[in-house]
Structure formats: C-alpha cells, structure tokens
Length: 68
Image (cartoon, helix red, strand yellow):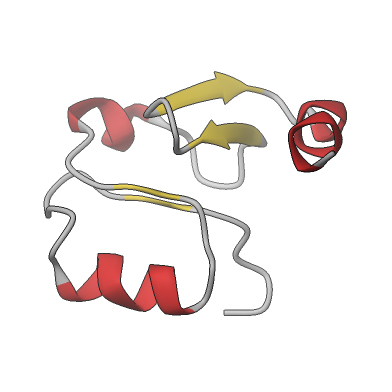
C-alpha cells in the first residue's frame, strides 16, 4: 500500500469498506467511476478526489498548490 497515491474504483460507494480504509490511510479516492476500467495499467494520472475527476499525466505542481 505504500506505493498507492490514490484509489479509483468502478463500483462502491462512500460507505464501502474500501472507502473506509482509504479514509483511514488518507488516500484520495473516487468510488463508482464507470470509466475507470479504460485506464491503462501503469499510466500516470492525477486524481482530484474532491471533484471526482482524473487528469491524464502526473501533475505534482497541482498537488503542491492544493496543499498550501
């Protein structure tokens, strides 16, 4: 789990077991995203869990700005 930076699932809800574990580990999580299966394994993406959006590519500068 130390390599995981965010979770995205096709099924589930905010009260699911996975969502509860993600909250405990402070992982950004999007549950119930139908298009999640279209992502290629190993592809870099940026997850905006607050908005429920996945952006193509790694954008660490967005994360740094959000934490300030």
